[in-house]
Length: 128
Image (cartoon, rainbow, N blue to C red; front, side, top):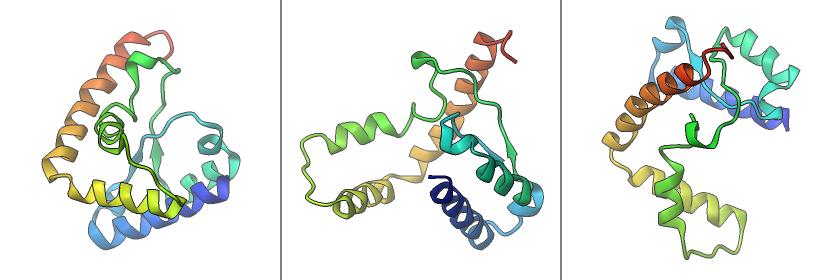
């Protein structure tokens, strides 16, 4: 599984380099959860090689999800009732759904992420 995460990080780095050239030199801050594949030594090494900062993720709390709160609710509603015969068909559908979202959808998500992170930080003061 770490090799899948590493490949995803490589793809992300290439996409950032082509779409936002100055961003890599300014530094990348990555937020992902504490799932085992994300915290594997190989993934940590890749992130260190990229010189990307990783934000500390608070312990799991269903009411304070950081990464899942914005996209997955609307995606779950949109996908309800659809049946897919292959994984590729499902992936294509999700990618098409993401492309159909207006830019403001993702801008709102980033804005909400900041307030969600603040709420988590305040709730887990002792953790940090």
